Length: 240
Ligand SMILES: NC(=O)c1ccc[n+]([C@@H]2O[C@H](COP(=O)([O-])OP(=O)(O)OC[C@H]3O[C@@H](n4cnc5c(N)ncnc54)[C@H](OP(=O)(O)O)[C@@H]3O)[C@@H](O)[C@H]2O)c1
Image 1: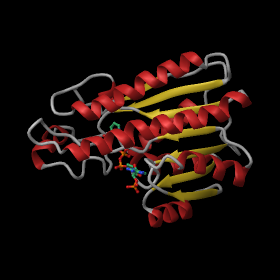
Image 2: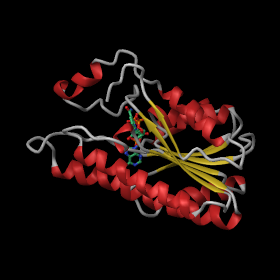
Image 3: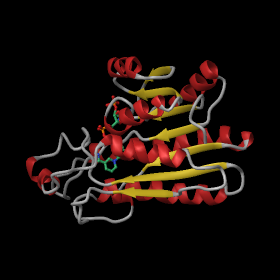
Image 4: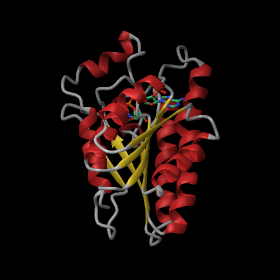
């Protein structure tokens, strides 16, 4: 896809990977609808974009938000070419530690909201015979470790959904893909306990948000006869 003058939606754009992707894709000429809950940070992001952008603040778990994002893209820019469905949270802990409300909120954000946005986007892409959906999965969408049961479960669900949808839509011109980051330096783990952060500290050079953004740009810019169904990117020091 030629990114110049394309139109895309990026969720989780107020921080980390989404923020970096917005900056990078905008620099490549994409017009963007960016979303997250923190409106003031989205406004700041708009000021840093190289191409046109619109911010729609909201909770991704709100069932009405996907259509509002699509309406904003089509209303303002007249089309929709790609969706980077990236918003997510990472609440971890053992059976004794983890809070049930935190687990179920995470399922709603990482899974339910991503599913809703995926189907809403694909209902635009399929009739137009083109469009790219990239959802942010994780290394923990491919393998598990103790203490991350529910987070990994949400990412395994993203992997299964995306691969089945890719197969369903093969040949329609619509590409369904996942990006699978390893440990990336963002706000995602900032609320973890010191003990939970121990494995992260062993990785002195994590992936940077812009490394993931560059991979997302690479996936979007592939010619239309190929698809990169999944792309795993890890810090060199990650052994998991
Ligand atoms: N960092 C890593 O090591 C890593 C590794 C593998 C996968 N991932 C995945 O990468 C994605 C992006 O995370 P990140 O690392 O960039 O973390 P981050 O810096 O914490 O960013 C998370 C983004 O999601 C948004 N978000 C969270 N809950 C939301 C909600 N209820 N409604 C709307 N937006 C919400 C946040 O915005 P607001 O708070 O403003 O709403 C923020 O923009 C996630 O799906 C994460 O699971 C990250």
